[in-house]
Length: 99
View 1 (cartoon, rainbow, N blue to C red):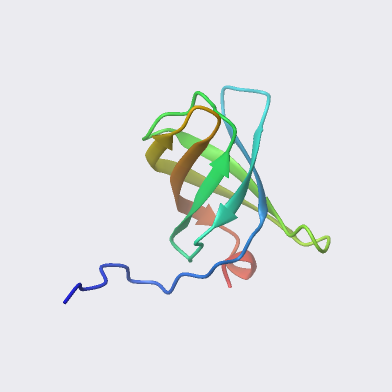
View 2 (tube, helix red, strand yellow):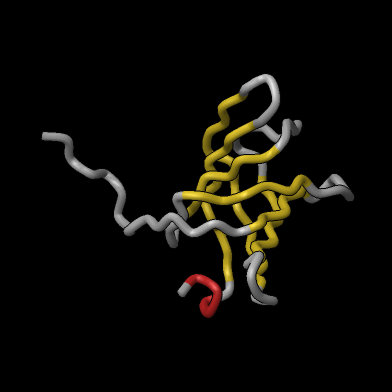
């Protein structure tokens, strides 16, 4: 039997995410999936971010004006020839936005 290692329940909520590093003025835009209180996966075009980098995140609901800001860290990264999929661990986020 496979045991679930995750502590928090995960949801398939699709949000538009803008991610950017502190030292870069431009953002990379992608779509989240498999999101929880501790982090999420992000599918976006190729970028130069590496595991361990701290990022500024802006999460937006595409169907409304709801948005949240957070800080996170890239935990893992998978590459394809046209896209990147990264796992992001949330470090700081507004309490209202987390819930």
